[in-house]
Length: 181
Ligand SMILES: [Fe+2]
Image (cartoon, rainbow, N blue to C red; front, top):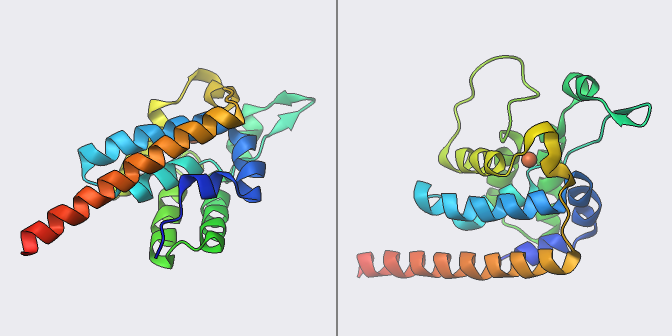
């Protein structure tokens, strides 16, 4: 099965519409953080970068009288729920394995608890890495959603990340077959 790449994801219409709405620069930076964190936490780098890149795909902008309204957002936001569903649909359309698509969708669902009633979430390592990567790129007042990046820069950075992920997956496979033989 050929790997669905970050570039495949970037170039899909659903991504172009919804990831750009919540901030392409933030999505790319979060994916880069997730790759680094995946090594530290022993998590599959492919799943980590995809979930991180797509984590805010469900965002909707809450405006009142032309201005961002945080209380309206806080009251009505379900971006993680919507994002999980949207990311899953997109990945399945691109040919992602259903087991991986589910893991990625769950990491998107649980990357924030801002929409949940008070309580504690217990995250698995992949979900933890994605939530942490998001925090690494966070700026006060939600400014990370408004950082900009050109289409070309996004493509260059994601393609570099694709190569790093593929190298890491290959090294992992080699290490596993060496331990079996
Ligand atoms: Fe985010």
